[in-house]
Structure formats: C-alpha cells, structure tokens
Length: 259
Image 1 (tube, rainbow, N blue to C red):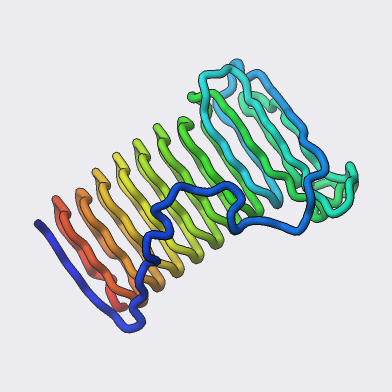
Image 2 (cartoon, rainbow, N blue to C red):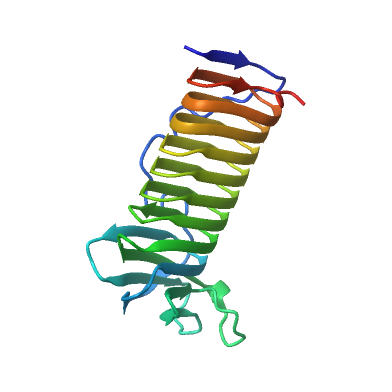
C-alpha cells in the first residue's frame, strides 16, 4: 500500500456522500416559470459523427439508445406563453446541431424561456455541449465535450474521451473508458472508475477520486483532495486543504502542496 496524508491550513472536508447518489432530474435546479408546451424533434443521423448542442437556460438529459436518429423532447417553461424563443435541430455537414434558447438572433428573447431537454442519441455519436446554466446528465455516448456556465454535471458510462470545462457546480463522472480532463472554477468533484488518465484543474471545492487506471494529475486552488487507487499521482499545485492519497501503484509526487 502506498499512502500519503498531508494537511494545510483551512482544510475542507468533502460533503458526507452528497455526490455518491445518482443525479436527480431538476432537483435544486428549478425555476419560477410554468410548463407551457412540449415539443418533439427528430433527425436521421446517417453519415453523422457528432451532435453539437448549444443551450441556454434549462436542464439537459442525454442518453444513448439502439436507434438511428436523434430524438428530442423539449419542455418549454415560461411565465406567460409565447413563441419568442429558439428551438431547432438541423444538419450541418457531418454534424447535427441542436439549438435551444440560445440563438444569437435579435428576433428572439431567450431570457424569458427555460427549455428542459431530454435527448436520445445513437450509441456511436459523440457530443459537443455548450450550455449556459442548468443540470446536465449524459450517459452511454461515444465521447463527450462539455463547456458549461453553471449547474450540476453528471456523466456516466462513456466509451471515449471526456473533456469538461465548467464555471461552477458539482461534477460527477463515473465509468469513463478513456481519458478524463476536468477544468472547474468552483464546486465539488467526484470521479469513479477511469480507464485512462485523469487531469483536474480546480479553483475551489472538494475532490474525491477512486479507481483510475492511469495517472492522476491535479492542480487545485482550495479544498480537500482524496485519491484511492490510481496508477500514478502528481499534485502540481494546491492552495489549501487536506490531501489524502492511498493505493497508488506508481510514484507519488507532491511538489505543489501548500505552495
């Protein structure tokens, strides 16, 4: 066993299991608008490799299925019903583009509308998500890139590379078959079972990691760090918070702690 425990001033403890539960749709991510309409969109994906989603306010749940088309169910929330919002699913070369309350068009006032999306995609399709705010859940796709302003991100059972760039909010990643790269402004991070390497650059918030086959490399501003089972561990920088490392098969490098 290879175990290292270090403490610095201002140590923070990760919440008592709050991230270990599966993501719960809409919990904590509500709004004061009411459901006005439900719309469905479909698009055949022949010769497509990627779905690009540009979304404004609202939640997003994306899962893979044994299908040959993209299927979208959109719930439109507004204080008063109106059609002054953007929602479209179209093809652009070898990509599909889903726009939801995010159009850069003076005709639309997207701030008055929240759109909650449920999306089914073929298993071989990659995702590129650009989201303003709201809960995001992704499960079972080929690979994923997520750029998010704020909100809880839950991503599971991904067969390829995952890249997450997040402003604020909790992040949970489970069963990633290749490399995982997370850049996060603030919010707790929980990672379970990564077949490749894991890289995290975090501003603040607790980090809890277990079962990484490759290297774990962390640059952290503040918050506790716990790593159990990894091929290698390196802490590049750490402002404050406890660091607990155990069951590392290779070298442990702590050159950034407390600096």
